[in-house]
Image (cartoon, rainbow, N blue to C red; front, side, top):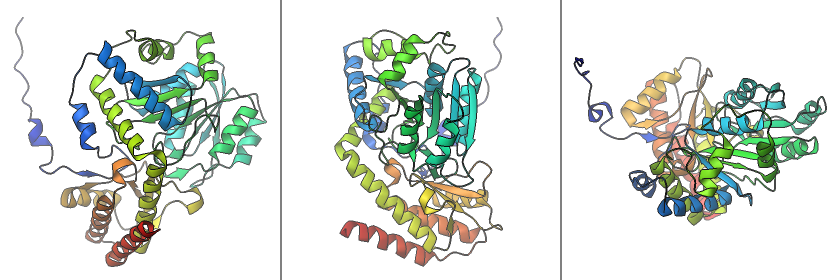
Length: 400
């Protein structure tokens, strides 16, 4: 065989920026040194060492999910793969699904249920608002649903479904298994799987956990896993078959070659959460996000979502009509080496407050970069006022 000439490519060192960007968007987030070190290691995906790591990941996973369920597993894929694992295993053709839709990612759950043959009813929340429990109950009364899907926080538009506990209680009351997307919220705010009657919960490594993208966590309740074991329809997704995954995660048997470096990174991320404790972590995230929001408003910018529906984990900021969100983000990235997120068709920018993003030095650097970029893009902001309010807010929280 005559081999073609190899392609000409640019070395990675010539593609990446000389100075690493501070990742302050909706994910991925900065990772601690210990997580980065763990991610640089390779071990055998089978054997005693990996078994010991897996056992501890499951134990720590139960802590962050706040569950006694044994059915905690990792997923070799992004949070969307964990979403699909929950849906594909619990929804069979004809299963009646009520999907609460606040935005892009909650609609993704509905689409996934559609694709596996579920009989899906979408309940759309009002624009820029959380869904209300009474509206969910009205929908549940209409028809013999078996699955309810809902997000705790809608990353795409920064809405928080504050009635989640009541929504899950209603789901159980009306005979549903509750699937909850906690992708951007887990470890940044309370989430109690058992107490809140959640049957399947999913999260990604690259957000609140401050781990790497591409390795996720999922947990099923005993009731949900019993349904999986009794399902009638064949499972279409081999890699995402929870029964096969269970063999690796609980019986030390081969499923496929696990992403060992990613699992080691996840192990260290979970361990650091345990060291901080969940209450301490919730407190840090609430303090930092609140201070950032106050600084943004003091700068003269408006937050997208009203306080009663506002997600702290990802903050949505409206820009004046004459200011380009893309230009603001470009200036922040190129000049100030701070990267934030745009949105999916909305005239906003989004700043993450998940994991290592919620640290005071990151807040000051990000708010300064935002204000400077706004000015450069033609906007008018009170930068001194915003920075002073951020400092005041952080200081008051420390004194409290």
